[in-house]
Image (cartoon, rainbow, N blue to C red):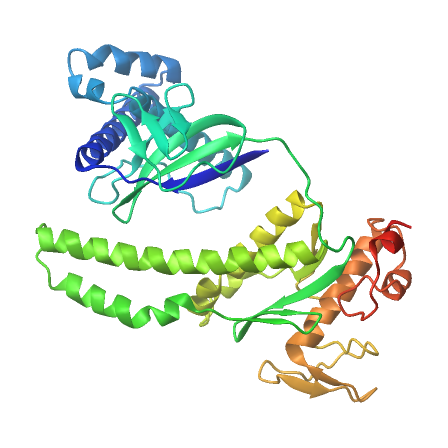
Length: 400
């Protein structure tokens, strides 16, 4: 299993200057290789990336001596990144001809500082210190969390701060969940972020909405600054850090939410929402702010590592309109109806909770049909392993 750990660096002014120069070399090598690639393609020549790298190295001594001031990995990793980006572009166009994919373009300092990569044999990590070639030791805010073989590293600027991302190959160790084979249904929404089939709720954070006023003031201030001035650069940094804070708060909430769910349940049933379509509606801003798609991805990743599964239910399944007690379909239910009474059995339903219970029942039915749990839906419900059941099953009963 391959994992990545991003760690914040605390460089001195001299070390930060080295990072800027190395990022500039990486940007220069990317742009040079891109122009060389286009020239060879226009001339009808076969593009051999090893030859492009050799040609670039041959010009370092005479034409580009500044490249030698930093680690050679900066330029080589940038050319490798360009090669991968071009390959991904052509593969995507081949698989999805109508997809809106842009060919890799030139990198500009005015758009993003960027960063540079390092091979695993050119840097080393020890405690709170990372050794960078031709620079020395740089302080890290925390130690590397993963034990395993380091594959590569990348130092990158983000909102005025520098981070080191280390990719590590670790042994695949499947963790055990607290309650094996317990299931839960989750109904995601905007008014309430997540409603679980056991009646638990997780409220919407709306981090972008909360920071909207501050971001507006910062944007107005930026508009008043003269282009190219130092004040404008400082103001852009303030805006970048404000956006980074919103992103960090959102990710922190999503990680904690997904971890709690995965630790408690091994079968998680969610709706296969068309998030791409929902982000084209008038509620697009709210859906982006909620980050439901990212939450589902985190659930899938953590569940896979814990030996669980995330079962997706078809988006056209009437989870909200169906009475989970008798199965009646209420076709008259509108989006504004948050509660409704079943005309057939008289059961009173809260819309989101009813949807979560239906998602759990349907997800379990799909898994039972595929032979995942080895029992029928009725037997599974009777066993008390679902989140909607109040029966407590100990580990011995589960094993038997």
